[in-house]
Image 1 (cartoon, rainbow, N blue to C red):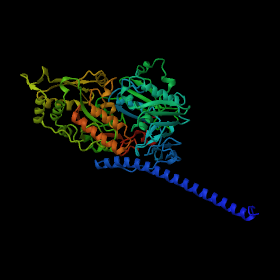
Image 2: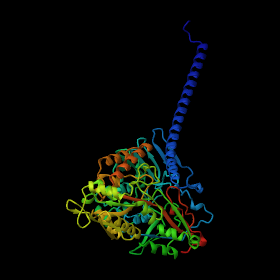
Image 3: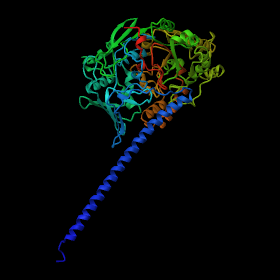
Image 4: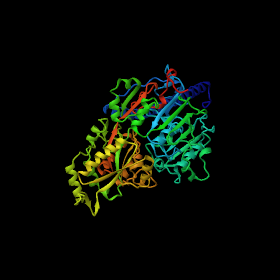
Length: 619
């Protein structure tokens, strides 16, 4: 009888079970909330880190005298449903159901209209416009309206937004990037953009038989690019890389149906074949005259604004300005002397909108030494050459003060630039001492000589830039006072690039475009000398190589900036280039073009431009 299970026992058992269930449910809710809070904390940390980096850039720019402006509110239909979040496994996920509109949204303007032509000038005619292989800025300008990539960079936030890809996922360790393509994305020939096209584009770029070593250098840390399905592709990296998202996302995607040649070597020979998924297609290339792009009738994205984009080849800056004044082109980058002269004219300002700014793409001019040549092998000689050039006088006289002196290869408005590296001063007396220590002696002809080699060399310059010729002549005079004979050799741009690629030069005056944070591997890593890489002067410094590799693999923003600052100090001390200046972007735009205001960091963006219907001139 004492062991009998009673009704009272049953009631107590039920109460106990209910309490256990309630306790379990409470613990489950607590655990769920804990995970949610952790996830939110992770999201906030990622957002805070990204905002901190961008604010650091913008604050640096403001400290250097460039005022930031507020964006125009875009119509938000293209951004509704956008997702940026950190997943439970720590990976980052971004999804845009629709391609993003420009921050300075032209479509929302009350006078917006489709149509008309945009006519611009190029200072040199490209020798080819085939994807990957061109090495001229003019070719890349043309390609930008025809070729597209998986991601685009927002010119205001500087974040990467999905474009051909609808979404991307980046693993927590940064070694795996997965993209899912948009279903409606297609090439101008009507073929859909597939994961196989992405793989084909990557394989083509990485094939040594394709003449694109400078671009290929940015993709050396990728171990594989694989299609997981028709619309899903994954990039795998062997090391963390600070530009992994930017470079994989920026890979131009080309159609295998067009570029799948029987022999890969054919890729280098089809100079005028340009087919992509972009808003425009190549209509005509008239040698020596212009290249015409027309609206892509099959374009999958937002409707292209202009009916045509015309690029006219005008190598002479004065001729280009005259074309602008005559209404034959719509926009023109001005030389400093032109800027000062025409900004004083009310008639000019009534017809043209003008902008002056430093942007993330503002590059630098330089004289590059071929370090294999006997004159430039030692650092003391190269430093002496820098001391013989009065760079402040060049900026004041030839640039009319519209430039800033460089102390290395990084954009002067970027946090990548080391503000503690001071310019080598103009000091001919100290230069003479250094030259003597380097073994140079004055001969009976009044020229420096060392080991039977006279200090006489040629400086190659692009013939279409009169400004470069004037600066070169000034530098020639300054070198002559020290017993150095520099001959100036003007060449057309195509021939000049061939000379550089084949290393047939002693010294060259050129310029590099900039970015808010560039990867120095392409130009400064010792291995970038081979295969017509961009390290044409054969700069080879073990410490610089180590810093370049360390910087590429450092994902922490502040630590990476510290590495770049060290690298800049090393490069500037070695003086493989005579770093000259970064000039302001000076541009005049016909006022019939609207919505041209520059972005704070990236400058003007032609994707924002349009012509109101009443002002259109081409039908």
